[in-house]
Amino acid sequence: MDSPRFRLSRLFWIGLALLVIGTGPLLLVVVASELGLTRDPNPNPIGFGLLTFLTFWPAVILIVWGLVTSVLRYRRQAG
Image (cartoon, rainbow, N blue to C red; front, side, top):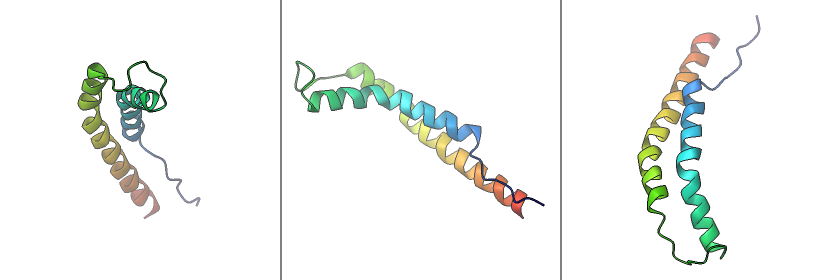
């Protein structure tokens, strides 16, 4: 019998996508500001900050839940 492969659950990938989509724009603005690519050296991206605020913790919860689900499924198949 083949040993089972460890596969990450769909919840993990949804959480990761939510994290990237939710925090990516704010991180891009911060990095662009630090590199001097914007006219304003101290931007105030309130919309991107709110997007990050609303998506960060749900994304982290989905990632952790997906990891736990994946580990439990792997142990059940291997055991």
